[in-house]
Amino acid sequence: MLFKTIIVLLFIGVVASLFGGLNFLVKDLGSSKKRLLRLLWLRVIFATLLLLTIFIGSYTGHLTSSAPWDKKLHPENTVAPKN
Image (cartoon, rainbow, N blue to C red; front, side, top):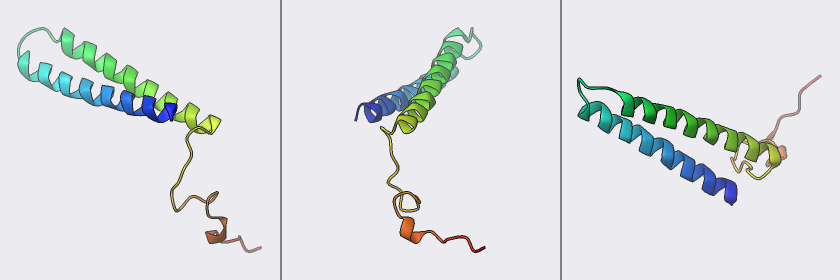
């Protein structure tokens, strides 16, 4: 449950940074874009942390798939290869 909470918080951070950058892009027309660049870096950091959290969670087994097409969950639906 901890990984899912961290993933949701990081995703909210990415979206908030995206809309904050849009706000600064519209508001700062013709002026210095330092605030916009800071939010871009913040969005890149959040996205990187989000991907790392997903990879670590799936590697350690804390995040699993419940998709109906997952072969591990439904081995009876897989077709054996013909030799």
